Every structure is written in structure tokens, then in C-alpha cells.
Length: 424
Image (cartoon, rainbow, N blue to C red; front, side, top):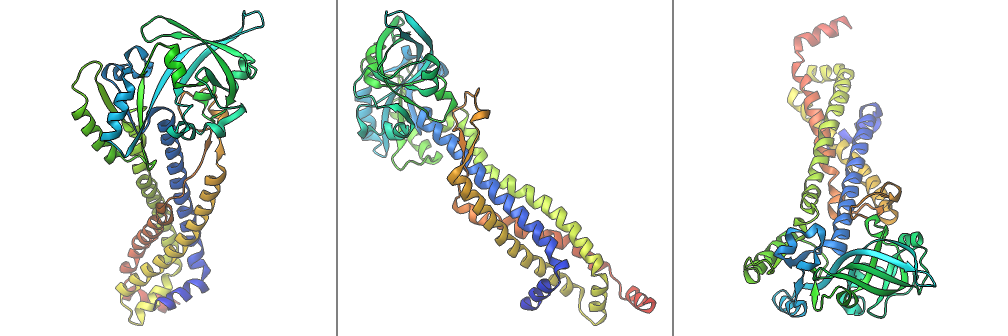
């Protein structure tokens, strides 16, 4: 019977072509939009984790209250000992100290007078020990435009845009004017050994990358760090694991004192919690919208098809076929159309998604004034769900549309049918 119905659909294109096109288009949009949103959200979360939040972050309770200001006067002290304790307690996490700092970068001329200067936002990480993973985590080698990586504590990298603005040449001395940990003015000379471009506007406008030990000396933060970031060794953030780590940490280390360490999850920073929820809900929203819209379209298509096949249904009833059987065959036809359309739409959606995953879309022109940590090139991300998510609206919409349209079969009366036949 199914083969008979399939042959009928293939031979009568007017009955199947338009529903097939609509189904394929809806499934294509569903697959592509899911993959695109999944990739964009994943990139935003990954970028924020690598540059700012970590998967988990340890700070003092006082620092946490003013974390947007990165108050280094409220930083952690005795970081080396704390890091060793955390490594023993949480071996599944790699811990790395960082310092976020700001200040004025002054570029002197040959006479030692100010030639140019500008406000800088700096990030101090462990650059001198590649085994710490910071160079790879921030992808500094790939981001390097000119020069080389720092090899000494007082060598720094400057963003390419910032270097162009201040007309910095490789090997020049630059003076960082900032505030020390204890509130006094801090001034330190650094050597600019390279420029970087991260593809993140918030970092590329006025960013400095420095070695942790050099900034600790410059800001009087011996064995101190503003933040101690933790990254799961498998590279994946999971809210359930982070909750378990936070609960264990805060029970062990945080007694509520102003300078006691406390742990923050990625989802508690930069409004990333809402983004994680958005990723979870968005697929359901997309599927729901397209099921509704496609059902309406296919309902109307089914109604037109039912009117065109009005005589056919009448003849089938006249020769004794039950209304329920006619109704079930209509639904069976819609399931076939839904399957074929879902295969075509999913194939097209995956093809475009894979292209967007490899090449991406450059939105740097729209991010020139953005302060949000997100990449300039947005990409799709094909996951296991991408392969089957389109079949949900593909099957549901066609089936629901046919179920609604097919109700007209039950309104046909045999007595009326014979009158129609007599007229003919």
C-alpha cells in the first residue's frame, strides 16, 4: 500500500510538489538557524571563558562585589599556595592566575618626552611558561601580527590597532602609568616586542598582553593576582560540573570574610547564564515557530488539494471505501512528503552550515564600538542535533496540516455524492 501511495505522489506532481518544496524550505531554515545560533553562542561563551571568565573563577569576596572595576587592591594574596591546594582538591581543573589592569601607555620620543599616549586595558598572564597553557588558550601565536612573543618579564604585546594609533615601533620602550595594589601610582617601563590582533573588538582597541610576573612587580602585587581562573581539562563547560565544584569550594575555602576566596561559575558572569539558557531554549523555539507556520501553510495547501481531489474522494466513497481509510491514506502521503522533504532540507541545511562553520561571516564592521567579548567572525556549528532537528518540523508540520485539511472528508455525504454524479 505504501509503495502504491508513493507511486501516486511521484506521478501526480501537482499533489506533492508544492508541499515538498514548503517542507524542504522549512527544514532547511530550521537546520541552518539552529546550527548558526549554536555556533554563535558557543563562540561567545568560549571567547568570554578564555579571555575573562574561565569555566570557574576564584576571587576574594570584596573583589567579587566590584568585579566590573577589576579592583586590584582587593586581589588574592598567596596565590602560589592557593593554586597548589586547588590543584590537589580539583585535579580535573587547570588553574591559572591573571591580573586585569588599566592605565595610560606613554610612548616617549628620542628625547624622553611624550610622543604619544593612550588609555590601555591590560591582561597579565603567564607567558614565560608555555606549559601553563595560556599562550594556546588565548591563541596568541595565531594572533601575533608583528614581532615575537615576550621572553622576559618586562616585555609586552600591544594590539595592532593600538600600536597603529600610537605609532609604536617594535623594540620601543613604553611606560605604563597605573595604580598599584596599595593605592599609590605605579610606573614601569616595558619593551614592546610584538603586536596582536585577536578579532575581538573589546581587546583590539587598546589591549596589552603582559607577563604576570612583570605586572606583579609593576603593581606591587608580589605573589598576588586579581583572579584565579579554572578551566576543565577536557575544555568543555558543563553547568552541572561547575555547580559541584562551586559547592565543594565554597564549603571548604569561603568562610564569608572580606578577603576569603570565593568561586564564581561562568554562568554567573557577564550575563552568560542567560546565554546558556538561550542556547538550550532556542532550538525548541525555532522548531515550534516553524511547526506552527508550516502547519498553517500546509493546511491551506491541503485544503486546496482536498478541493481539487473532491471528486476523487467522492468516487472512492461511492465504491465503498471508508472515510477513515481515506483519511489515513492522506496522512500516510503527508508522512512520505515530510520524510522526503526533511531529507532534502536537512542536506541543504547541513551543507550551508558546514560552509559557515569553515568560513564564517565577518561582522567586524558592526562591532567597531562594541564592548562585548565576541569574535569578529561568526560561525555556524554542526552538532549531532543538527542532523535530526529538521525532521521534527518536517514530520509534524506536514502531518498536522494534513490532519486538519483532511477533516473535510468526514463532511462528505453519500446522498450528496449521488446528486453530484447525476448532474455530471
